[in-house]
Length: 247
Image (cartoon, rainbow, N blue to C red; front, side, top):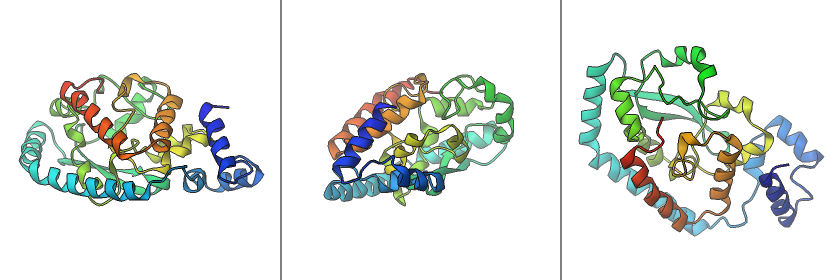
């Protein structure tokens, strides 16, 4: 049993549950594994800080979209010149409590990248819960640059603006990635996904143990406060500027 499972069980007992992993819980988890995220109440929800977090997300994303609009236009032109296909790439992801939404990015790969993924599955260089290659042949010339400096992620400010994502949170996975999830991994869905987080500022693609990724997500959600968000945003700056551990 992992450290998170023990921690969840301990907190659940404190919250009045006999155990999160009793027979009734297992029955609910078998029907809907996201139950663990929907029903696990973190000890400190901090409702006032959560409202402030949402206000900051809204104002920062709105301001970012306006201020960065010239950069958006330049990147759009470069993408169209460099390769065939749309400027933006949208992909269905799983957010808080497993809710589906379309996450937006600047297209950094060839137009038929999803079709080619099957041939590259055995070359995954990160962990079993996601797919990353340091030298992915599907990435375009412009794509390599915008991915290195996380410019491709900027359209997600729109997702933050409408409340599907936050500035800080876990990275939203694809539904197909859930097949490698253990039951306790679903605890990550208790919070909103984000543009940056502990994983992004602690090594990104160098972290190949998916259990460790979930440990980070759980640590963030269970210890969340506004100061932690500001600290992670601050740590994101050098990671973006240097392109450290990007893939």
